[in-house]
Amino acid sequence: MKIALVLSDDFSMYHFRGGLIRELVRRNIRVVVIVPPGDFRSRLQELGIRCIPLSMHRFISPIRDILLTVRLYKVFRAEKFDIVHNMTIKPNIYGTFAASLAGIKRRVCLVSGGGFAFMNDASWKTGLMRFAVLWMYKLAMSLCYKIWFQNRDDYELFVQKGITKKKKGVVIRSGGINIDEYSPASVDSDTLNNLRVELSLPSSANCVLMVAARLTWSKGVREFVEAASRLNEKYPNWYFVMVCPLDQGSPDSVPRKYLDRQRLERLIVIDTFRHDIKSFIALADIMVLPSFYPEGVPRTLLEGLAMAKPIVTTDNQGCRETVENGKNGYLIPIKNSDMLAKRLDILMADQDIRAQFGLESRRKAENEFSESIVVGRVIREIYELDFQKGTHSAR
Image (cartoon, rainbow, N blue to C red; front, side, top):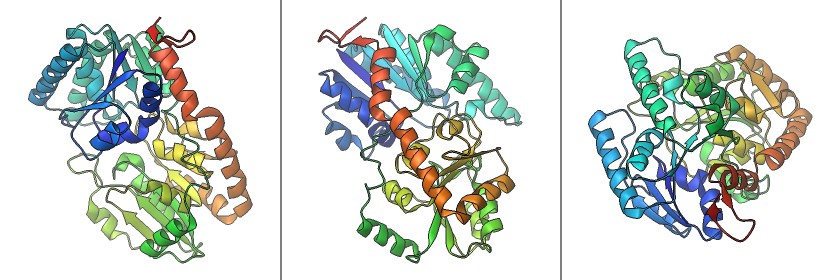
């Protein structure tokens, strides 16, 4: 049995699909990972797999996208995979086309959030682009055998819009989280103290943390900043920390000058890529993500759950999966900084509520989002591999 995993980002393949790769390797399945060249190629290979670097331009570019399809076709044709598993929009579309042309019968996709194609944007350029992407998505999904959706909202939306048939979709919430790697005790005190020194946080200070993959408006940057300004004077011992790398070239990108205009003394913005996100989460007293982006299930919220943090996020697709309102956190309306400030106010004022919510978050991670549960379902329900009789033949 030979499986290809195709994703447009080597970091995400290693960090978010590492558990799936390890389990497939443990079951003696040959795994080949196809990702753009990057710093994580060697780490991926250390998992016991082959890695084929293949450039994938992030934004729409007809010529580059055609070349990507041709290159994927050549790889698939040469390698003769039993299963090709595409992940994220570009691989889902062009990887599925290429796999079909190469004669790969078992073609599966992961929809980890709707992405920009499902955002409400009034500009005619975005509308035209969205129409083209949805048309190609519909064609690609017709060629898929199974489609893994990470939340029910996306599944129902794809069915409602006629992008895919109901019987093809399987809802497996999130990509899972390693609950041993991410636990309340997984970051030592020296690491936390060093991070406090780096951020100039007093040892007694509390922290509200927002982590997002990109510094974009749709992740709720404005809402976080406005909530922080409302609460800044009332809570002089609290710091508001944003870890959101700059997103060059995106029309949704937040200009650095917007953040430079914010004069909050205890608002800290980290706009460069960090490998130590787990340390930031360990430092946090509250995790926040006021996103209105069409999410899958945000990885940082899963990490916050596993590390026993109270969560405040939006009642938005993907985000709502992580919170039972009033039990382990709060759900707020999108684009509502006033409600975000009110919910943060409750948690910032009461350490006992924060502690209780944190315990419930950890239980939720263990019972619903453990990587072992998610990976097992992917292998059984998406790949349809049967290991009951000591075989890995597809049913």
